[in-house]
Image 1 (spheres, rainbow, N blue to C red):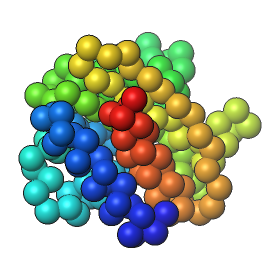
Image 2 (tube, rainbow, N blue to C red; image 1 turned 90 degrees about the horizontal axis):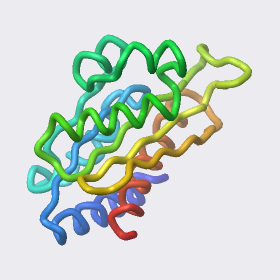
Image 3 (tube, rainbow, N blue to C red; image 1 turned 180 degrees about the horizontal axis):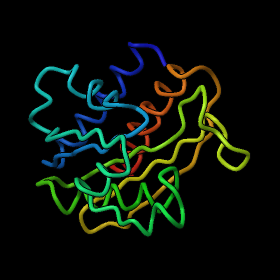
Length: 163
């Protein structure tokens, strides 16, 4: 997406969060804070964005979000189980109504046959709502994968707010 399209996406997300008097938080791994950066590029984002955590290592995911060692052993950090645990763990710890999580392989290395470079998992959790997750495989270099993942994370939350 272009910078203008990302701005429009954040604006729509902000309007929905403000409309319902809700706040959100992010737990990011492979995007390295890009989602939080896009959100805070909008002036006044503190009215609806509470915090963003970059939990790049398994240790950080465990300490800050409560992801258990069992999740890493059985499924790995790039998995549905992990992003669900990340989103739900942040929802338990932050005074917010919505959370999103991202974990993936941005490359250029680190991929495998079952999890190639570009594989990214997303999780979305909302108070009183079921947690949802999505897997996508993006093409391109590290920057392109991270940018596509950040856009998907935001659009996924916007879809949930509208739905």
